[in-house]
Image (cartoon, rainbow, N blue to C red; front, side):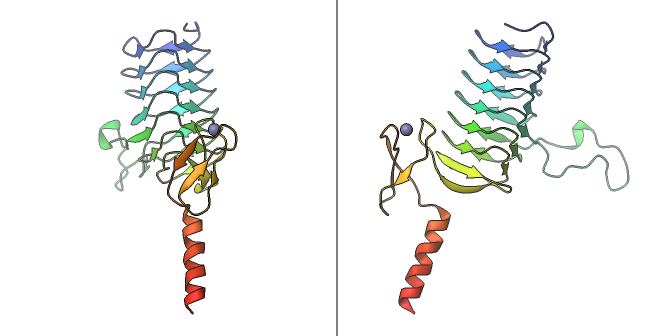
Length: 205
Ligand SMILES: [Zn+2]
């Protein structure tokens, strides 16, 4: 289903069962897999690749250089930037054109979710089943299952495939979901490592 007010390039590829709602725009060379839901006013730039069963909420902007794997959730008004050195003109004042830059590559891995109004700076990878909090500004890679929040975004925990926050089982590196019982082996959080080091240093002194 493509709503009559949506603008889908004849050079874009759209998978079966995908729904594209009011005023969305899908540019030339973009690929959208099967069974996706593309909300009102979404922009999918030239050459952007979107997997299957991806939900993209209203007004999200997916600029070139972005690859989204299967099962990803992109909240409303999320922006994926694609230029680490944004300028309109050269130092001499000449207008820059598309030929003057290469879009940075950004990857959102399987099952990840991006909260409303988050901004993702290009060049990062957001890991499988990771969760980016609403309004976050993501400037660094997010590990698999990572929960990041804030501006700039910091890793504050891990989430399960069911999106509930995981609880650490002691210092073993094992994490457990209180909702569904799944367990995971994940790296300690950066804050925890720092605290443990501080404890050890204090003990040694
Ligand atoms: Zn769970």
